[in-house]
Image (cartoon, rainbow, N blue to C red; front, side, top):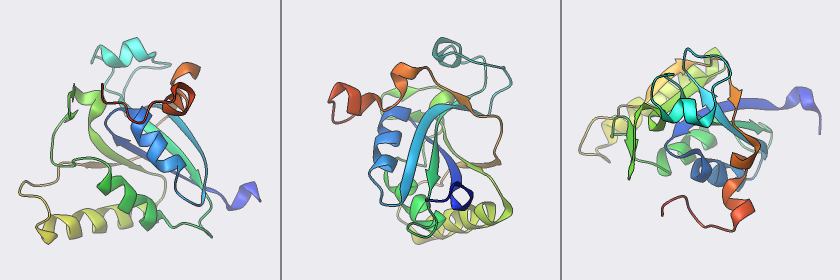
Length: 161
């Protein structure tokens, strides 16, 4: 596996434990890392982000092999694992840190993300308009080690308690 051929994608879709678990299971995903992006506070901790004052979202940085899975495949999974019509919440998790967001790493990712959002909005799948933000990738701050692959480590099936 050549590191130069791998690409990165970053998604926020609620609690990062479940989002990471879903992406880890997708063929072609080489690695995942949970963390924080989109805020204006350097080196945020989980407590900082949960306070709601940093502006960060809980995100998953996905490293994938585009020869095996496409960015479009990643987008399809993203849209299917959460409700992109709820602003600043997913299920019982409430706050801007749980917002639906795609951080694109290049112009092609931006184009594909915007097209997929438009297509999904036009499909009528959701009665409400999709509120997912599509933004340029910002600094990714790795979350604390105990958050990495949390569901796998704890044997839980989801992050819903």
